[in-house]
Image 1 (cartoon, one colour):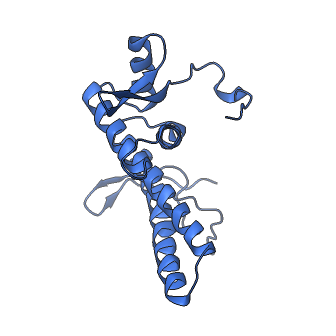
Image 2 (cartoon, one colour):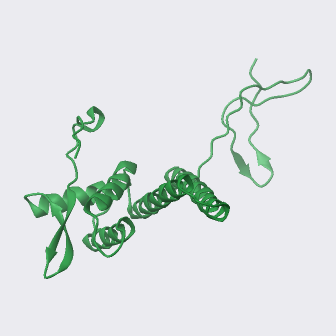
Image 3 (cartoon, one colour):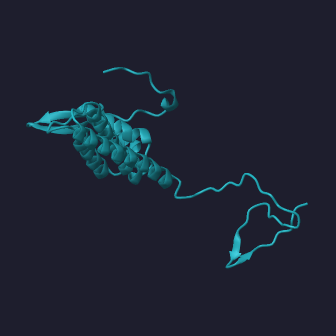
Length: 190
């Protein structure tokens, strides 16, 4: 695996552990790749914006199912999807769930991008193109949903230019309604 220099922007924050897949009695078990299980789970919980171990266990299972092809758990695929979730830096479980959906949507989008590049006939091309476009639009909507959720739905309206004609009046400053149909009157500024 390639080694990359540590991102300076996040150098002060310890890295969340990776996931390793261990075979136990013929079954794949997900484990944290860290010498101290407690520290590993705390770091991973912080990275996914949660304090709930059951949430983390469920999330890892879902990421494993979405990242793996076939019956075998794909350790690199799981860690890739987990890194996408961690990269979004979710602040709570809702953001984590949306980040996981975004990671799954991204993976599916790239799968159909690959299929689109390897079509053999027009029906395959049409099918892959439709799926790719739907997934790409879904991802864009998910990014927008995350932005709206993080901003608590607040909108900012900024007026760049106001023209007041002769005889007109303008209010400068914050305007807040004082009740139904009532605004506080302010003296015009000279």
